Image 1 (cartoon, helix red, strand yellow):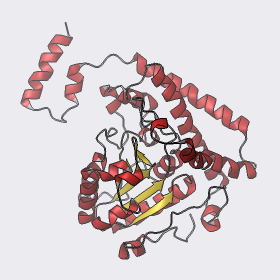
Image 2 (tube, helix red, strand yellow; image 1 turned 180 degrees about the horizontal axis):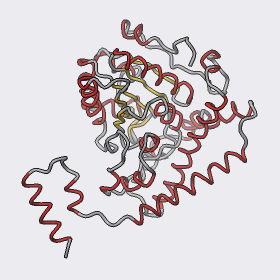
Image 3 (cartoon, helix red, strand yellow; image 1 turned 120 degrees about the vertical axis):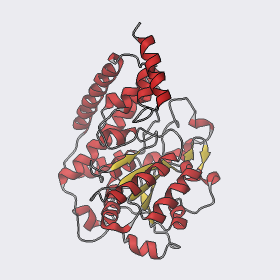
Image 4 (cartoon, one colour; image 1 turned 180 degrees about the vertical axis):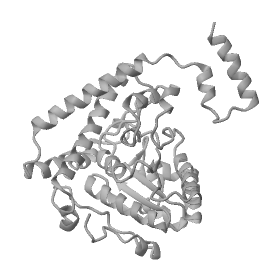
Length: 367
């Protein structure tokens, strides 16, 4: 990375009443607007960023196909949010702790879980919660991951674990939940190393962002907790990565938490449960965001540099989708969950009453 910092978090912290313009490296027309930061990325870096976004788009498409076939449980689509999700998670290290929400399955996989485990989690199977990644399972309660992350962050600080942070996600609607405020306030008060990422995709299910809050930006919600915050173009993977990396560097230096608001868009439904976006937004509203598609933006940059082609992308998509088909087969082959297995995962050390329940169900299951 370049010596020039992409953002001065300390200056923002000292003057929280000012909100910075959303940070970009590539604008909507795929034009470089910060040459020095752009030049700090190698050609291999740029190609890798594109591969990750293509991977996530393919994951979304194939997984939604599985959902329509009745082979998935709950799943939240991610089409349109690839730059925000991949850009931020790739800036983290494997020793960092991820506290994801339910739309953050791609980040969980990138952080160390397998696709098979993610599919089993979607089905509510206990095996889907046994991944080796430093992460909790995706949080279903909206906003609650922020409270979890604050506790993990304090644990990191108290344990003296170096070069380690907690990072967590919520959506624009999540910032209207009490858990989000509590988590930010706790992390701010104890200066815990927590990166709070708000993926502002415009809607809390069907409620538009403008009806959720009067705050000019969601980043400003960190002000009351004394946390420096910044807005980033969430359709620009380079900006998302660079700012997330800068935030991480800032935190491991002992400077406390940071919030990043990524301005992104959910192209499809809220979830596989079946809401219809056509009922709460128009094509005219959607089109400007489709024009900002993060894959289109990055594709143009790479094609102009002779680093990408339609054939290469199609080949990658085929490879990725083939791997997802293998993953769903592996998930299908896992034996049905036993009640005793579920109970064993409730507490690290089962209570006396829980031990009795486990023994009771094991006896039934052995017959």
